[in-house]
Length: 254
Image 1 (tube, rainbow, N blue to C red):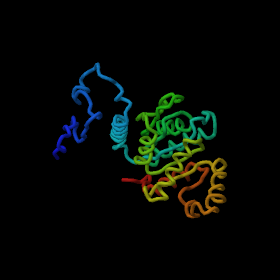
Image 2 (image 1 turned 120 degrees about the horizontal axis):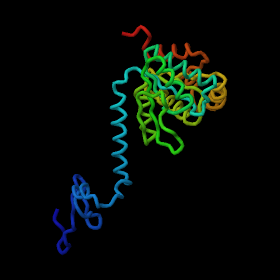
Image 3 (image 1 turned 90 degrees about the horizontal axis):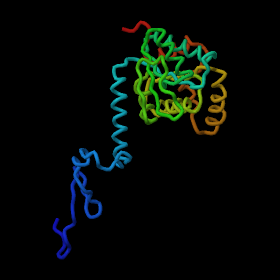
Image 4 (image 1 turned 30 degrees about the vertical axis):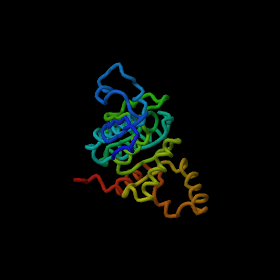
């Protein structure tokens, strides 16, 4: 389109599909900025670059896990003591899941996560750790034989769901609750189907379930049928049986 008479043509720059004019024109070329090692580094902190890093994390995570096979994600507190009953239960759950034909996925940290990874390793199975970059975390535990570290929580959480056929949730804190309620929301809204969720530890989870029933549901904020989205047990064999049955995989798989 021609400029109006007497109006000078604006300085114009095209960078791929992007058009820049006037004070939005950038100096140099894309190749020059890529190859010039003395150029500015502020671009590392821009949103377009963050999008590329996010994309790269998805690619790395999907690439590492795409051939994993049937798996169950096990959640629980990083603060679970190694000499506790909860830790022992985590080890037994990890073993039982491997014996039922599953790989075990955890957040790769200490405590309950380490316990489930330890059980998976001791049973000769695949023990996956999906770590997260945090200032107070110390890396993946020693029982992980396939590990991926993430910068972004939402990429990590996608992998927890995408590559698992269900969740077993041991007693845990805010991170565990975050994963639990995201999974419940995904099942409730039909974003994922055939996805069993088992809460392990009646004494620990009963107060939360009472609140869901007596406050959330009683106040009309959820349906009574939402209580059917998960199971509660203290028995390792029952937990594994529930997750195995609903995930459509049993010990006699072919």
